[in-house]
Length: 362
Image 1 (tube, rainbow, N blue to C red):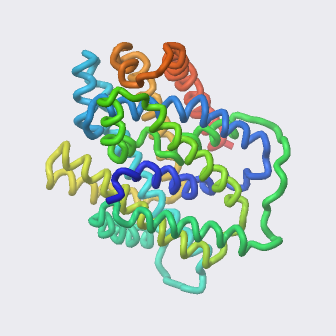
Image 2 (spheres, one colour):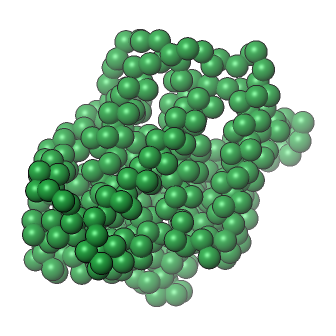
């Protein structure tokens, strides 16, 4: 029922889930806002165009789609690794959510006194997520609404103790750029294959009708800007027990959709038993890992996936194929995209990787 709008729901939900983890209390730094907007424009938008175009061109899911595209472009099989990386990113996002909730229960709801370690809570929550995944994307809108309500409670229930203030310029470093790029990628779902899964049919129809993909992609990107801005604002507010509880319920529903997506892709590639078994074992094992470690794994794997997607789109695909898929009104727009995806995006992502390593070594 909501398949057509899945990409918009994901674009709304993910920023609210990850901003507090990746860039907490950054709402008061004007330079970070500017870096994030730059990253959304020169990194996030070109990759969003690339992923949507590849989805439209292949007319299939990420696994089968990458097989078609590599054969069509006469490219090396190594590029098909993006399919595996994209599914792994989706699983890591779901695992990060349950690990984060498991750690948060002990921090924000100490009165429960469950006497269970955080990894035990995380694994138990992942079992719930696996059950919810049977509902596919049906409860994704409900999950988004709950996350929004939880965020609003956090924003207003923090009262005068909230750290929200007028943004001011601060010192810019590698770490800030790394966080800005990650927010421009992870929190909007590019590189996860979700835009093949949720928006592939819509983008394929646009391509077949010889219309520009810009009319489909730009509204998604603007939605990400709006909800990303709201998420940055909320990230500086206090988390109350009520807001944590409401948001966590929504997060579990979103995680259920992500597990459904990953399981469906793996079953399509390896068969019912192997695909489902791999998904169940993978999410349970990853949910037992500490939240900080899962987040580090998620950041690096997602950045690698984006580099693979960028280089394949810019160098592996034939120029005429993507030009026809985009159907831009002018050749100049396509050339700008090609420069960004060939040079700017890989360089920006590599700098972000370096920034994260510096942050983690401090």
